[in-house]
Each structure stands twice: as structure tokens, then as C-alpha cells.
Length: 457
Image 1 (cartoon, helix red, strand yellow):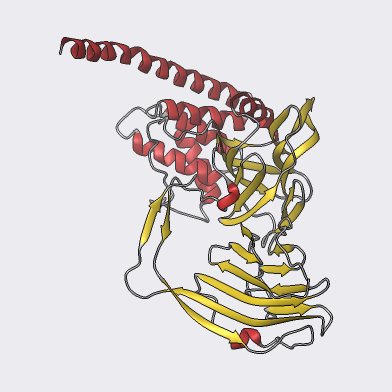
Image 2 (image 1 turned 180 degrees about the vertical axis):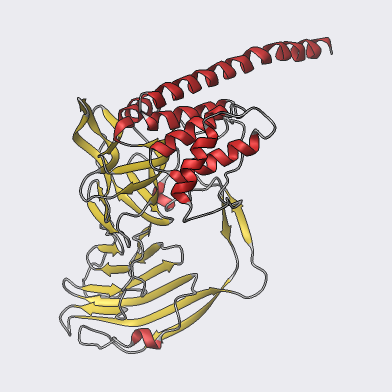
């Protein structure tokens, strides 16, 4: 008992110095934020003020510095909501003389949007800092002015290997003005020179361009819009979620000597809330979720079968197949089965009607909003029946079996204008044909839905 009491007493005696150290670090961050603001480096000021709040959520002056910096960065709504939060948290206390005139300036700018702040506009009070699940690197706002800070900090604490990185991006120009990746890099003044690249992700105002072992492009529906981006790298492959849509996995090149994480920004590009952390998962089972946990639905599926009788070849007219099939829109999975007989090079193309497409030949191609690397699973074309089964999942995943070779899950992304020609055979008539074409549409059975809780990797 005396030993336990001694241990408790020792812990109590150790706690105050640790708290004092956090307060000292927070005060230092506020000082840096003020210095950066006075020097006109508003991105640094935002990040330093945010660091101070994570260390000590009661340092309300950090909210003022952060708001004034956002005002200078032409983010009036963010600045306004932070100052309203400051007023609420310091009600009855002495308030900074900078707040009232700043609110007057901001109200003039946003009067056409709001007259009074709604609860949805006002962010929640900052929470206490937690070390559990904290990212290794966090930057609240990034531009060309502080991209060197990110490069130095990220590569100091994050190894050039498996990692998860999330950020929000915006670019208003075309070209390589927003580039993220893992490459051999060095600074030449304010410019970043890249040599060997494991992979890069380029986001301009109109599209995302991915370059690794192969390349692919995703066209955005709206030019100049903001995008939520999450990237996973498991050492060999990378996958993304862009505005929630899963994409990949894609093959990366081998890590070059002296590889570094980088984010290169030109004047017309910006990133928010970048978080980076090591990741020990695998992309073999698909694209992870971005949340802290995930639940898989285990509700039993009921399948509706639709079979197409007879032999099908290149001359078969299946343009009306989409009108003859059950609705695929509400399906949890669409399963397509058929048998191929071929003696030479041939292709069978299958589409579910949402822009995804699988081409089965000697190898298998999966494409949609982006084109994925080619899968080795394919037809032998030796004049014997070869079974093919393709699965199109509601989450955007595509998987299948060709003969005895499996591929996927892969996520090519959906795109509008998928077309109504859902099945096509390409090959000389008489030398290639398909039999037993069957579409099975799986929907969740009515009644109580069941889920299995799980954690993302």
C-alpha cells in the first residue's frame, strides 16, 4: 500500500512541470503567430495560432490572431466565425481591442451572405489536445509562401514510405500549380527541383493527374472548385479518395534514393488542413475509409437473375440490353457471368451503366473516371470454355475472376454518360463467341439491417 501511495504522490509531483511545459510551448507559438502576422506571413500565423490552441485551448488570443490572418488571406467567413466564437468564449471578460473593428470590416464584406451568424457558422470551442491518433504533421493552411516549412517539417518526422495524407485543395489555374507526391527533390532558392518520382498527384483547376508506374487523369465536374483529397501509400501502391470517391489502387515506381514528401504550390493554389501520419495498412483489400472506424453492412442480399439465351458474338445486337435488365441503380452488387470460347485475340466489354467498364481479353482493363493499371488475369483463347465473373459493387469497387485468376478490388471512379451498351463482344464471328450471359442484381432484403463494426487499417 505504501508503495502505491508513493507512486501516486510521485505522479502528482510530476504533473505540474509537464503542464507548465505545455503552457510555455503554447505561449511560444502565440509569440511566433504574432511575429509572423506582423511580418505579413499570414499562413504561418494561422498555423502557429492553431498549434497554440492545440497545446492550450484556453489561449483565446490565438483565435484573434488566427482570425485576423484569415482576413488578410481573403477568407472573411472563416475570420468572422472565429471572432464570433472569441466573443462567446470571453463574454464578461476583457476583450482584445482588435476584435470590434475587425468585425465591422468583415460585416461589410459578408453582409450579402448573412446579417446575423447562424449556429452552423460558429465553430465549436477548441478541444483539448490529444496524443491518441494525432497526425505526425498538421498544417491548417498552405500556400507558396510556406511550402518550404511543410517540406522541412514533414520530412523531419515522416519517413519516405507507407503513409496516409489528407488535405483540402483549390487551384484556379491549369498546369502543375498544385503538385503532391514522393520524389527525389531539392530546393533551388524558392523552387523545388524533382528528379526520380515514386508518384505525384497534380491538381489544377480542371483535373487531377496521377503519375506513377502508369498514369491516369480525373476530370473535375466544376472548374476551380475545392476538393477533399486523401492519399494512402503502402510502399508499392497508392490509392485516393477525392471528394469521397475511392480511386485505385495504382502502382508506384520504386522509391528513389533520398526520396522526400513534397507539396509544391504556385501562386494560384492553396491547401487547407493537411494531416500526415504513418500508415501500416495494405491496399490489397481496397481503398480505406477516411474515418477513424468503419462498419460493414452484413444484411443478406436477394438476387434477381436475368439471363440472355443463345450465342453472342461481334454481330449480336445488344444495344437494348439496358432496357431489358432490372434496374441497377439501387443494387448493392451487380454480378455478371458468362463463358467465352475463343481461339485468337478477342475482347469482351462489360459496363454497369455508370461509367465503369471492364474489358476482358488476354489481360483485363478496368476504367471509369480514371484508368487503372492492367491486370494480368485474362483469357487464354485456346478453343476451350473460359468462365468469367465480374462484380460491380455499390461503393464503386470492381472485382472478378477470369478462368481461375482473380483481380481487384479496384476503384476506377464513376463518371456521367456511361452509355446504354452494357455488353459487347469484339472478335471475328465464328472464331469467338459468348454463352450463358447472366446478370444478377443483388439488393438488400427488406427488414432489419445488420452491420458489423470494424476499424479501418
